[in-house]
Length: 165
Image (tube, rainbow, N blue to C red; front, side):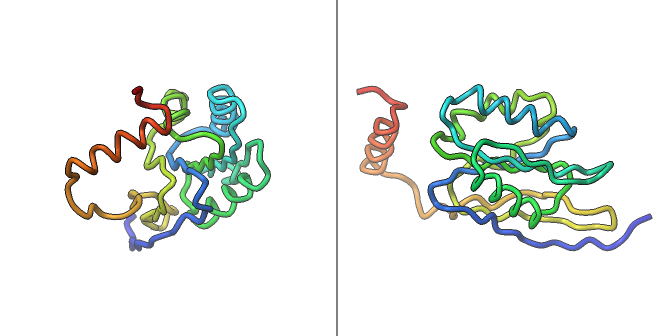
């Protein structure tokens, strides 16, 4: 049976100081395993997580250690409405601090983005439900970096502690 396919765009709503990781997973224990992964990777990280089931009860499962970020995850997951997707909102850490740990969680299939930028999620909807086709993460390039831009990048990495000297 085939049917119509509609496309839409959903903007992830979040404060500027919050990072988000959007991904695809496949099993109900995703919520618990991602909670443990983040809590174990960065002590003191604040986070909220929503995982949307795609079978059974089809509920959005919520975990985290910050009520505001949990609510942010819940609200955005409802708006996206794509089965087996997860949203993780972070404060007091960066995605780079948890990304490899999250990618190593057995249930995680795909990471669409990990960013503090504005994000739009491209959604496809059919008779089965909704799925994520991809994301628009931030703005398009405005040019190619020159020597001053290289120095600015290196200075920023030093500020964050990712480069010595």
